[in-house]
Image (cartoon, rainbow, N blue to C red; front, top):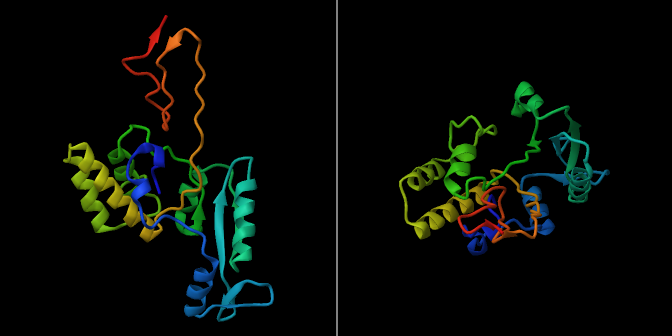
Length: 204
């Protein structure tokens, strides 16, 4: 889901969180007409089920692990190393099945900014072309809803739909480290990149 449990935006109440279920995956692929070949990869009409994953950066170990896990599930993955994420814009997202992205989902401590930027149809940052009228309507509702409990409820609804649609697959939420001098008081550690200082933060 886009927002971590620590953001208090309904994650704990989601009933459709991502889970690994190889038996269900095998069932669905078999229903779709796929059969495992001699390589242990699902194939249909003589064509293997193969996904292309665009990645960049020096550390590729996480994606290599994903490649191996999907191979065990009968899905081949080709890791295509790019020089930078800009190549995705140049080549177009249609050149890949999966694309690595690093995003800060809570940079404003409010769900509207991120959801409208990455999942509203027609948004420039919505590079995958995700389009769901129900999500658009809920995002529009967020823009005019000011009760905090209701905003959390709407954000939870959006996240549930995104999970059902598999709009994105969130791999991890990085841990945040805050280092300060002993003179600094009331410096909280938040689950987001910003808001490290508040009106209660002081220097003695």
